[in-house]
Amino acid sequence: MADQSIYLQDPSDHEFPVSTRVASTYNPLHTFELPKGEEKGYSQQFADMYFLRLVALKPTVEKIAAEAWAEFELAGEKARQVERVLDVRQGELCWMVGTVFMELPLKPNVLDDLVKEHWIAAPPAREKYISYDDKDKAFLEDESGRLRLTGAHLKSHLLVTGCIVAVMGSENAAGEFEVVDIKFPDLPAQPERWARDLGAKKKKPPLCGKLGIVSGLGVNVDSGDTLLHDLLVEYLLGDIPSPADVSQISRLIIVGNSMDHASPIMSREDFDAAKRTKKFGQDIHDPVPSELLDDFLAQLLPTIPITILPGETDPANVTFPQQPLHPALFPTSRAYINPPTENDPTPNWLDSVSNPWEGDVDGWRFLATSGQPIDDVFRYLPGDDRLVMMEHVLRWRNAAPTAPDTLWSYPFQDKDPFVIKECPHVYLVGNQPRFETAIIQGPAGQTVKLISVPKFKETGMLVLLDMETLEAECVKFEVPEPK
Image (tube, rainbow, N blue to C red; front, side):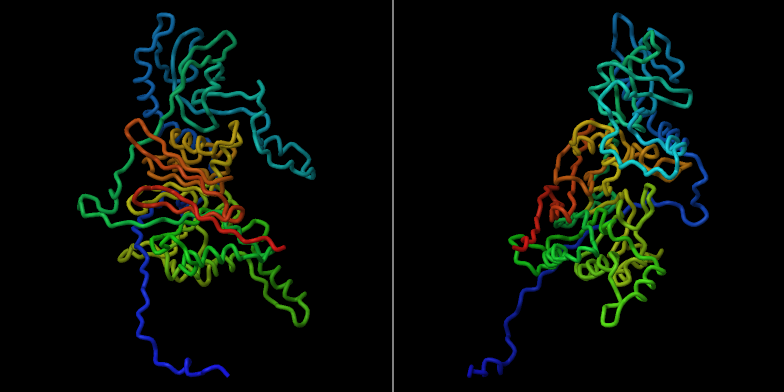
């Protein structure tokens, strides 16, 4: 028999090390929140959005174009500005500012769908709208009218519906505008780091750790496989041996598609019907995706703050901008999302935010989306370079340029919130094909870190962003296939 004296010992005096997680300085903005209650309506038309966008960006584009083309001459003729599209005269070298509209035969058209027989099945979504032939047309429009753009120079620029540009050229005999050059609004002014958090106090900023970023968790009841998610939880809690110090991860941002669209949330009637069909001895409760996600969040929240954005497959409004996931989805975790009061405006430990989302983390200005704007821009453009598309979105100064044409949007009447007023330091786009990063520069010294975040369900990748240097790295989780 084994010696049992080893079990009869005094408690050990050995002191185990206590690991403290680095604090996160978090200051969200509420740029994309919609009105509440009766103030929110859908009876308006969408034309006002294009007008508001043009009004907001036209002065900036005019200034850039005027400086760039002030000394430009072609055949001894200087280019002059015309205020409206309809003021263009044939053969005269001129430039103007307007909104791009792409007429693509493969682009979905709601009017065409209405005239079809309603019982015909809808065609599958197209990967690309462009047809690579002369049927694709580009137009420049303003409140006065529309003018077709043409010319070889046009093909050297990436254009989508909704971006505001200045074009220079002349009208030919066919009534088309031969483009010589194009100018974009480019990056806006960039706030200094810690500007909102420290202000004029000039305090010494705190030392920062790392930011964890993940997208496309894809919680799915049908598969029942949560091992990959369990590995992520254990890693963030420090339960898995790792060469990296996980206590340096100060916050987790979940960038959309946390639940899988293959597992919709059951209605009360469907749930009751499912219970009635259960046989004796079977479990009368099947978890829904929101419960699994709630359990995932509840395990992490006692130790790490979380910011969560809705995505295309999450139970949020379809129109852009998507509003925060409702606290009722998280019965266990919602204790961490009590609304802040006037006396205590501290952000929630679990901050359910809109998509897109804008805010300051450790002094850096972030702009994040769950991927729909870039996925829609991808359909307008050749190739698959998502970083180039992300760069152009910033240089167009619009977080969702194709809304409301092919990206469903709320019909704003007072302003277009997608217009980027301040240049972010970090631009996150979730649910992309692969992990990629790049740094772009602006005309006034702006520096932006672009990060393409892949789907965790498909790649097992967690992105870690060093909040001192903005260097990004990946941690990959894998589950061996059964033999």
